[in-house]
Length: 400
Image (cartoon, rainbow, N blue to C red; front, side, top):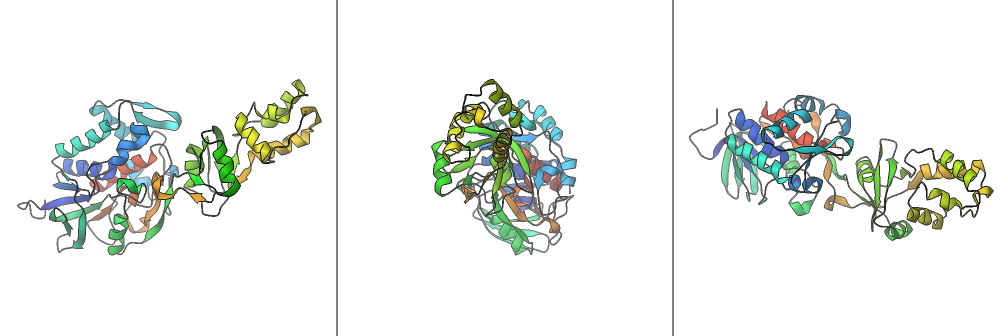
């Protein structure tokens, strides 16, 4: 029952943030019989959904499991993820006749444009009786005897449930702000320091100029540190390194830390080079390596002195081959930093989960206050995991 059902400015649930999590929560809460209002300072809803997956929305990943997420409390996401799975979201797409396909590593994309997902989210919200007001910036949030009062540019609203779904700091050009963290702090919550995640690395000095000289070149690698390892493609850029493997490891990277890159991506390169030497003893080491690595990368590594300029493979001992393979399997480089919030796909860190219920996403400090989606200290891998967290955390809050 609403706080004051006879007032148009009283709602059972008020959601701040019209992104994936906020819209999904609004629809689920509306289906549960709540009078719901979703507001956002932006003029268009769900912009991250719109641009995701090159405009086709990588809406989930069939391999979703708690181990695909980073959090100071690695157990927190288990409950929500178990109660709303990728199959549950797929079933919802089927009801709307939205077709999809699987790409690599369990990533699911729309067959058509991402607008189909946005239309579904908006259609379900309105179909459940929920309201959406865009271009509505929040000026103040306060507690009342029955819940919360939210003052906005479009009026003052009262609600029994306040749901913060305003996201993190990634991609500020799309309107990202630290609003969720401000509200959390206002009500006594701790914030795990936010940092850019799923973000390209930048380099300085010779590394920067060397990598820029082969910008656009991609190759499979294993990128790793002492906390994680990812075997996918790496891309050289004018500023440094990008590509799926790099974006993945960036979420586990700390400033000043070196990366280890296996340029051979786990292949038995020693055996391959030894066989090439037996068949072509008069050819150069560079010629042999070009069967394993892109030509331009071999040339650059040779120029940098990281591959010896051996005229004939016949002059190269088996031990020397093993040494070269070891070096290429553990190529150490130290980024100067990342490209930051401008290009980070998500925010790592956020609202401390120790003070939230893992079953309902409700604040343990302030009854009726919920945090869902990217603003919470739960960060998924690249490949649809962060959208699945948006759906699952929203579903958990709506079931409360």
